[in-house]
Amino acid sequence: MEGEVLGTAGLGRLQVTVGRHGDSAVFTPSGELDHHTADLLADPLAEAVDAGTTRLVIDCSKLEFCDSTGLNVLLGARLRVEALGGRVHLAALRPIVARVFEITGAETVFTVHDTLDQALQE
Image (cartoon, rainbow, N blue to C red; front, top):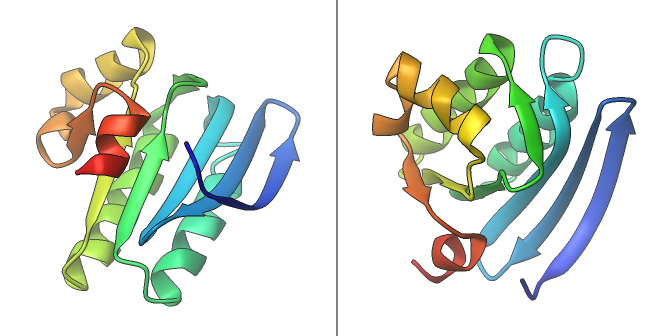
């Protein structure tokens, strides 16, 4: 992925890298997205939407775990950005994380891509 890295934040089990690629804000959570770490992703997602970004790409290739709190963070970002006419794109879901989306039916409300490159090209 070519783009500009804007920053990283971490809290033990989760690191989040935030960058830009064209008109997309790209978020790469690495580790476990759960009740204790969700704000590390929720805060920069909210900042991007508040700044008017309407194309959010979440690179899930390094996401090892996502519980219901993490799922709610992504669903909340989706609602906010879709209210502005935008979309949330999920890329490279690992099987254990994809299973959470399948069980809850959440994969039907996101645009899901096999790779980050595909998400950035759409």
